Image (tube, rainbow, N blue to C red; front, side, top):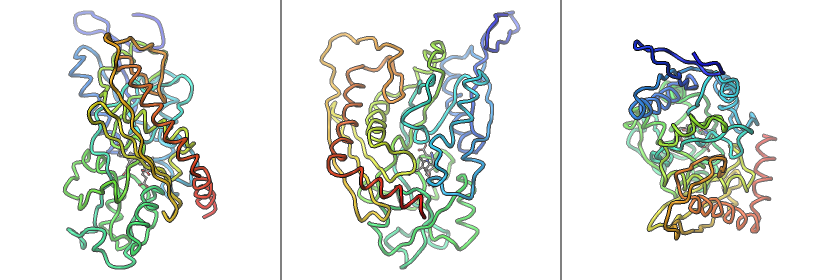
Amino acid sequence: MEEGPYKYVMDGNGRVSRVIRIGTRKSQLARIQTDSVAEKLKELFPEVHLEIVGMSTIGDKILDTALSKIGEKSLFTKELENALEKNEVDLVVHSLKDLPTTLPPGFTIGAVLRREDPHDAVVMHPKNAGKSLDALPNKSVIGTSSLRRAAQLKKRFPHLEFKDIRGNLNTRLKKLDEKEDFAAIILAAAGLRRMGWDSRISQTLSPEDCMYAIGQGALAVEVRARDTDILEMVSVLHHSETVLRCIAERAFLRQLEGGCSVPVAVNTEVKDSQLYLTGAVYSLDGSDSLKETMQTSLADDKQELEEVDERMQHVGVTATKISASAQDAAEKLGLDLANLLLSKGAKEILTVARQLNDAS
Ligand code: DPM
């Protein structure tokens, strides 16, 4: 067998092949997401041996504090990255929205898969089944610990109250159904769909009600940046339109210096080779906000597909088979939109939101 940091197996015919180990969080949603990526890889590369390695992260262990208060940007990703670093695993599957816009050195996002519905959804307490948010009685309590969701919905539905709810999806649904604390909770439609809980979605929120988080609904595969074999393998999972939308969204958030602890939201669309990005920042109660839309062309004037240097990253994403000029344009769009909002006072809104949240 070959020497080196990797693990190999020998099959019945004496052929040696590398074992590809996939790291995952242990929650049911994380397992479902990881299994779906593993299945795709198995179809595309039937000869590889895949192994799934489950791990707990800080985000899974601290269940009593709102996400936005823990103050750790890589809440759900650090332990998994440690395992990547030590070659204990070769790739890690994440929800893209949980990945910071700046990855630690040595890591890259080698694949961004086709986005599911990126919108947020309302899950009602069984006693409110079939209702929508505007039909709930005055002072009904809505569970969410997302500052982004609370800020937008407080403004839109002033008759409602908002309280933190933590825990993985299973825990949250239990807290909703088995107690009388919440009239409804807000969750990403993508997570609910992947869990097979579509039937619990009472209402999908339109961008007018609530714009989504950066990268919401897309799965990402994180790998060691130097591991060209694995990068090459996972790159076939990239979905071009999702990649370009998410590059724009991530560039927007990075320029605003926002993490998961600030109320920032987006909406992106690709139509006729144009990429549209709407981005917004909010005060905690939504009373103060800035929202703008910009667009860019993704059309590639060059005839031949230029090879993208594999060391080239766009907001952490390595995508050598997607037009470099389209990726550049998407990143610039996010940057430009953030600079436009910053010139109108976005920094002040976010600074106050951060201070108030830290103090509360
Ligand atoms: C991040 C946020 C939340 C998660 C903040 C936000 C929601 C936290 C909460 C960055 N990560 O969205 O404003 O509601 O208290 C998370 C979920 C998914 C990925 C669950 C969810 C599944 C959907 C996806 C938690 N991360 O948002 O309902 O793949 O996008």
